[in-house]
Amino acid sequence: MKPLIIGGRDDGFGERMRALLNAMYVARRFGLEWGFVWRDFDWGEDFLDGEVKTPIKNLPKMRELFSEDFIARYHKSELSFSYITPTLYTLHQKSIHKLLSPPFEEDWGWYMTQGDLDTYFSDVDSSEYRKSLVSCFESIAFSKRVEDIFQKAKDTAKTLGDFTALHLRSGETVFDEQYIKIWWHCRYKIFAYPLGVAAAFDELQKGRKLVLFSDDYTLLEALREYFICQGVEDKIFIASSFTKDLSGYEALLFELMLMSRARTIFCSWTTGFARCACYIGNNELINIHEHYSLSQSYEAMIKFIDLKNIHPNQAAFSYFFLYLLARDLGLPFEAKERYLKQSLALHSNENTKVFLLDLLLEHGYFEEAEASLEAMDDLERMGILKLLTDYPLHPTYDFHIFARYFIAPKYKHLSRFAFEIFLAFSDENSQLNAHYPYFKKMALDLFAHTFAPTPSTPLPSLTLPKRHCLAYVLGKTMIENSHSFWGYIRMPYVLSYVKERYLQEAADLKARGEYYDFYEDGHSLSFQLGSALIKAHKNRYIGGYLHFIFIQVPQIKKNFKKVNDESKKH
Image (tube, rainbow, N blue to C red):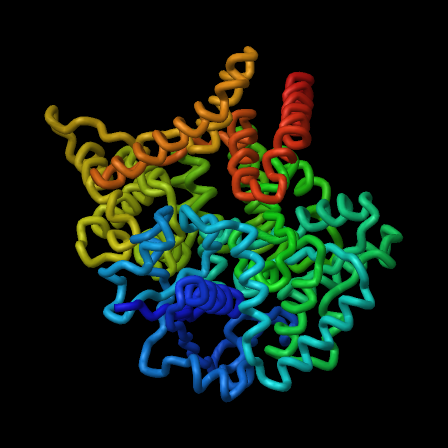
């Protein structure tokens, strides 16, 4: 039996199309039948009188997007959608050929992941895969209206010539209250505007033109005014200025095609829209969170965070993100507290209150944390508790967010939070256990030790055991083997061995049900070298290793030395 391959995502347009294109790729490669599922939405709202676009509101309906012949041939109306991607759990880092062997995830075959198959599977060639995706997209029969929109975008791209795209993804994640509550979870999906401004100036120095894309048109307008004041408006264009005669899904599709014509796309870590544009255009995609080191990101945030006419919600998230950078860089308590309070002054929300409380508890300011809760009304406290224990869109917290409330019974409000966390973990059907099943035993042990201590109750760890991430291990191995000629000779073999051993250990630990946090060591030289090496491996067929050895390694060492020298001065 041959499997059926289905593109059946049910979220935004970018993720839907990526899954659909991946299904086409797999079907072509192995001669399989493929199809797609597409649920039309009749709900969803934009924000700020339509100036902030949302994915659901602007999603094209199936018959607006595809031709009738294409729908009749490939739409599988008898199947449902799959928001998650089952293959993520069963075939990750295995051979793509395992898709052909039963048992399949479904009786009929597989829902296809929206992820990049050249990094998802162990044996997909990047160059072949990227070229095939372009061909797959070109073979899709779109509706006449969509074909006209795509042609309009292609004509605009020709007029612009060579340009770089900056996709400042934010939209509903910055303006919808249900997403504001999980800014921690969305921290790498949202593109903080100060990083975009920094990247824009870097590209301008290279003599390149830029087109700015965003689902927040008010942000684009504020940035346009800023760049006019800087005298560079002739080199920077706003994508929404080309879509005045288009509305809803039409503007979305125009911007997707225009973005796909860029030489390079700067985007946030998990945006599906920009990655879909990259699939279509086979162009360079740069994740802004990998492009800049922690210290470079911090400097850019400080430099450009206080621009004029930025909406308070945008600035509030940027200050929260600035706190996260300060935390990862190990900056003093006062700086971290200041950024969180500045964020809350711009937009008061449970997400940032959770992290302010956690910061106080981390540094032993128990009285201040208790006073902070005391100053809140019941509604505020209940809002934070609900976010911690009973919020459907889980924020993927680290364990310490819960554990630090278990300190001493003398604090009335902190103790209440500890009790509520204990009760939630005690309930087998709670949201908390659904999201964090491996936290349960640690939380219950903490409660027993804090509120009912006995000589036989050992003090549990407040955190999961720590492991260095793969990037750090590879970078450390490189440094250790760079002190001799023989070390350089054997380095490729040592790195390959270390990587395989690390992945096998991780698989063994997971199989035993053991979970770990990773050291937050993103500013170390080992981590930066290892991260760059992993990226170089992904681009190995297009000169990734050469770029890594002769350009990235010297630059990383230079930047690291500069940051260290500056820190010593202070």
